[in-house]
Image 1 (cartoon, helix red, strand yellow):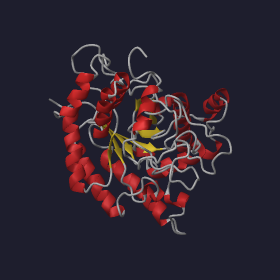
Image 2 (spheres, one colour):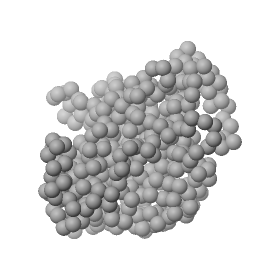
Image 3 (cartoon, helix red, strand yellow):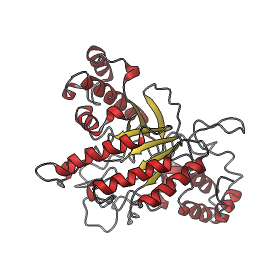
Image 4 (cartoon, helix red, strand yellow):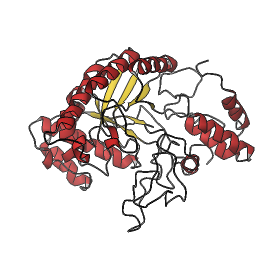
Length: 391
């Protein structure tokens, strides 16, 4: 068996079998029993199964089935903070477990990550980071892998958060680290590397494109957007197209400040691209997007209620988004993925208040990466499209 035998999981699956008629899995699921390579589904956070069991005991069978369907859907495997020996061993084990399926690896270990905020940590210096990346490359080997390289690494560089010196030493190191990772990982036989762009509510193509170029986008397969955020599929795809066009335009000698912004009317932006970008679209950089929690779109905070609403941080009443797929129908979009692990907390969100509770939820949110039961149920119940058949 590819999965380890876990009695708790088996019990949960048995108890909810009548409700969960078929695995939600991926939009690429085959209609027959033959295995066709697709996206890999990792073992879930054990707390998800504990929650499912408790829901069954409470008679909430459909909610339990929804939690199980959510965690049985392909999603990213995150690595960061392990030693080189640990990450090599664990990455290799994941590739072997995938048995030909494509693993989405989210690598999150760059020095100074997240501006030392909620998800701070990472390698202590560039030398440590390079050794860690070398180990990841050895672990991936000849496996099939999509590398989501360092969320927030380019959209949030050290100079953005006052962590750099006057010479820009740490920011220069960040670009060197990202370039090094591309050089090590992109040449691997089955690996595609995608770089960070934040999301459509943050940077415009004019500001993120120079960072992508310094980060080595020319050597990578492409870029990713909306990791751990809530923007709609339509907004993400439009943003991706504009960045792809802007990268091509600057590669021809253009100025990124002239590129269309995502707020432009689509017709006006398309006209600008047709008139100014000479590179044919089939040569533009590709992208992938995160749809794990965007089924209800972004949260709009109550006007004037918070000094810092933190709309990215465990916003209420969000839902799972469209299932992951390697077949998006868009020649520029290589995949729609679940990059952020749905059900895991973004951290303690105070929204500019003194705390200790999240004022939108009336409770203290779990720390970043811990299972958030209340949010997991919201994501399941408000999923769009529904995570369960018959909803």
